[in-house]
Length: 286
Image 1: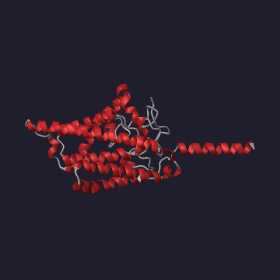
Image 2 (image 1 turned 45 degrees about the vertical axis):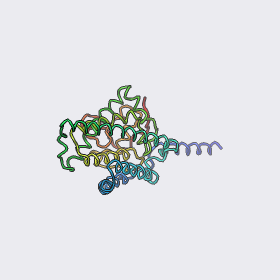
Image 3 (image 1 turned 90 degrees about the vertical axis):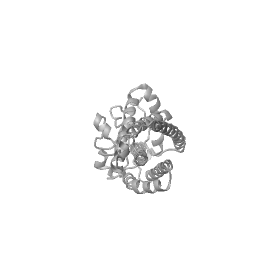
Image 4 (image 1 turned 180 degrees about the horizontal axis):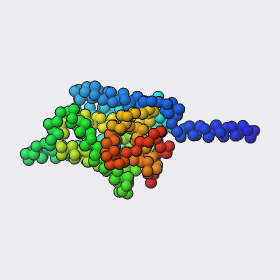
């Protein structure tokens, strides 16, 4: 009887340990195929959407496609089986997504009115208005990441910023659903800091549409509970394997403040991508 109890206890312990770490398939998976597929679809699908609908509609549809696509991928290729979202958490995340959309819409409308008023004063757009898309889109992504990177880093240091940012770090799982779990105040400073630099440099509407679609895709992809990695590409664009470290409960691991690209982390010394799986404990560390 004691032997049977011991075997049962060992089995339970192994099962609990298995749920706390990536499964064997995740450890052996060479590539994050859903992320690579999304990158491959960004240009053709984006072209079709922007040709057949208004910019705001196109970006909204693209975000919805990314959320659905990565959520389905999580069911067939999970990084961790215990990171699937509950119905309750998905409902909360959906409500926050609607709030974020409202904040984004209000700020963009206000920015448009300001730009229109400045145009009536005889002010011309900045340098970027004449750049070809091949230059303007990557530049818009890099510039658009700088403000949110700085404020994100500040929010992890200053109590005032953490008050609004900690909501994003509340979940003890990382998945597609909680990629949109952002407080409206946090969303407001992201949108405002990104839009201010874009506006100052005078990026064109088409370049900003492509940059926005790329950044939305990246925001979802780096949170997706999907196994595999991006290999050397993770040094050029944001990846799930890097962003999981950011959600660590250990402050010295919770770096990687960039989302779409890691450039600013690499420039300012907050880049953290050691070999092996990500942190074994994610969530709030304060």
